[in-house]
Length: 145
Length: 123
View (cartoon, rainbow over the protein chains, first blue to last red):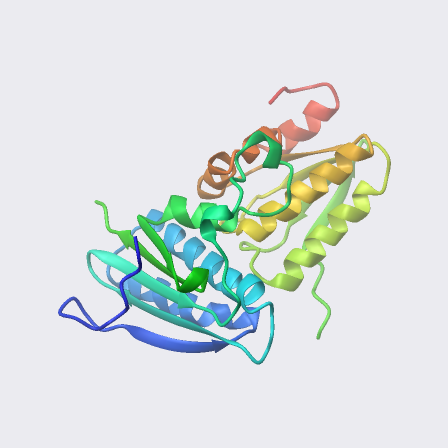
C-alpha cells in the first residue's frame, strides 16, 4: 500500500512542521499530538501507541535517514481527529527498503541490538506505509472504544 | 554538548547490583547513552549480576530495548546476567511484542529479582 499524500480534506486540516535534524526537537510535535489526543479524550493505550510510533519514526528519520546531518531536515505532518490520528514523516536521506529489514523477533536476531523500531511502529499503529524509497512513512491509528 | 546527568541510582545487595532509573521516561539520547554506558561498565566485571528496576518508568523506545540487549550480551559473555523488574504494563508489552521477554528474566518486584540471584524466588 502506498501512503496517502497528506492533503487537507473534509476530515480536517494537517499540521505541518519542518524540523532540523536534532533529536531534542522531537519533543515539540510529540507534545502537540499528545495534548490534542488528550483534549479529544483518547485513552492511555492510544496515547502510548501514537507517542511510541511517532518517536520511532522521527528518530529513524534523523538517525538512519538523515544520518544526523544538520544540513538535512525532517518534515512531519499530522492531524488528530476524533476517530483517528494520522502522521506522515519524511526525511532527506538515501532511503531504504523496509521489506529488507530483518525480523528482530527471529531467534537468530533476538540478541542483536538493533532493528526493533519499525517492528514496534507496525505493531502499535493500524496502518504503516512507506513511500519515496523508504524516505516517507505514513501511519494511522484508529480510535477504538 | 553538556554532559548528561547520571540517569541511574545503583545499590549493592549481597553482590547483586540493583539499578533504579531516575526518570519516568527514557527519551533523551544522552540519558540513554549514559544508562547504557553505566550498565556496560558493570559488564566489565566478570560474573556481575544486575537487577534493573523500571519502577516509575512509563515510556521507553526501541533505542532503550536495543541498549539492554547489548548490555545483556556483554554481561553473559563475562558470565553475568541482568534481570528486570517493576515494569509498567505498557512497557512490558513492548518486551513481549519484540519477544525480548525471552532474553530477560522479568520479575514483578526488584526484591524478587534480587532474591532469584541469591537462590530465592524464581521468575
